[in-house]
Amino acid sequence: MKLELLLNELKIIEVRNSLPDCEIEKICYNSREVVPGSLFVAIPGYVTDGHRYIGNAIDGGAVAVVYQNDLPEYQPEVCYIKVADSRYALGSLGSCFYGKPSQSMLVTGITGTNGKTSLTYMLKHIFESEGKKCGLIGTIHNLIGDQVVDNRGRTTPESLEVQEIIKEMKDGGCSHLFMEVSSHGLALDRVNGVDFDYGIFTNLTQDHLDYHKTFENYFEAKAKLFFKQNKASIVNGDDPWGQKLCELLAQKSATPVITYGLKPGNDYYAKDLVLGTTGTAFTLVTPVAQEKLFLNIPGEFMVYNALAAIIVAVEEAVPMSVIREALATMPGVSGRMEILDVEAPFDVVIDYAHSPDSLEKLLQSVRKIFPGRIVLVFGCNGDRDKEKRPIMGRIAGAYADMVVVTSDNPASENPMDIINAVVAGVREKTDQVATVEVRQEGIYYGATLCGPGDVLVLAGKGHEKQEIMKDETLYYNEWDTAREAVARLKGKSDK
Image (cartoon, rainbow, N blue to C red; front, side):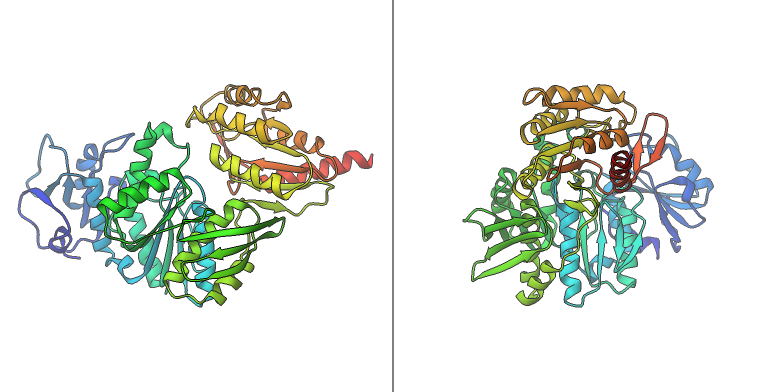
């Protein structure tokens, strides 16, 4: 693409040296990826600053540089384009370079502390049930139809990769895209250039305060999504921060707002919930009708996700018969309220719950669904929000009959320091707590505490396939670990 056409997307402060009449072969923000004919975008980062590598990019063949900070020198054979925010500019450039692919698709962005992953899968299943080919960008992986695409370890990739992925989805025949949008991604403008039709707000609870510092900052990052969509904002009206978002949008946005929840007064709400191990029956109340539905995934909090998905489908004229069938046949989402099939006298539930609110909602649902005692095994991440550790401990102590605190990606921290911070919170509610540093052994110990009819809840890991330690990252699989624990118990009992 011609450089001049790309630069039409930017608010340019200054151009040094004349614009070359050339084709841009590639856009890069990593100087090691530059090829001859590249446009290099220098982005200030938290670890290093892309401005330091402009010389390397030029040596690699970059013909033009987009930057925001004044430079010590400017080479005469290279065009320098100064902008106010080069990170923001990257998204605009990427969208233009890849042909503005999101404008050719129906795009729904989902943000919130919890529920994003399950909701993207619900939406994908509903619209695929109507015969649409759908793309998905999210925590577990990215999907083009059924094809798995590497998400490079990020819920929301850098803006250039986002545009490249959307272009792949468009070329692969996708008409719809459902995308998790993290608070980090919004704060760092990773979705700049994405043309959203719907924005969904699931909730806002304590998480990521190590990055955002305050709830207000966290909320403001989430709220950025809702000034980007074309059709509607869909907001959890039961959530206090959702209510605040509605007030903000009423003042500053002309886009319609549709609320959902379990409380009457929302535009869409669910009542008469019947919770079970195979799913939840409920009555959907809409502005025009009531429908009896069954969601094939257990947990009250999953009903919230279903409501948001239903709204998008109804707004897009998907027949209620299709929605009903899709929810009833909805496959489970990996590591989300997943009841493991094991030959044991007790049940095993695996869930990604790693924030105070998600742990509380998980345990509340488990208490309503399972009649026996709850044995909970969980931990908290290292190098993350330390304030939530005793809070999650208190929640665990309040809802579980026995708590086993163990490791969960301790990273650079001492695992026992994290465990002890969690235990301090647990002991405020109960003395039924044990500590086991190694997670595999913690899960086995938890299994030994379970009697017939009890439920072993494994929280925090979910779909993850790694355990991040100080000096290494180890392969880890929660499902295999749980099955091995049951097998060890069986072997012990057979002796």
